[in-house]
Length: 171
Image (cartoon, rainbow, N blue to C red):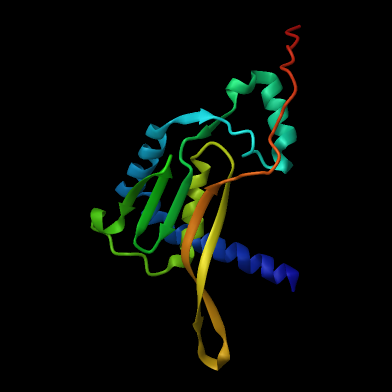
């Protein structure tokens, strides 16, 4: 059964990517990516590096110094059926589908794929969470529908503290 579930998951993932293509190629997404780029980068927050990634981050820090480690200035993203909201230093910037003459999204189960696409264009470590509601179906089955997808900068309890910068040998 595990193999069938993996194949089904991959098929659903491919369908979701195909379904969101019009949104990814839209003026709205271009404006969102432009806004993310204009917000710029800031120094990496030592507590935003996940424990599993600290070894790689330590290697990068020793090669280029801590000044080489940057993260996107956007703190959070909220995606729902009405639009996408960026949160940067407490300031909310909303991109509503209606402002671009698009209809609200009916199939919100594709929003996690849109969130993954946006995270790929942002520097730093982010967690994607989804809130959902249950819809009763025939024969007593219950289906989960996505209500909102939230992308939040990762936060660890222990700070990332790499060692001193090591000089590299050129030859």
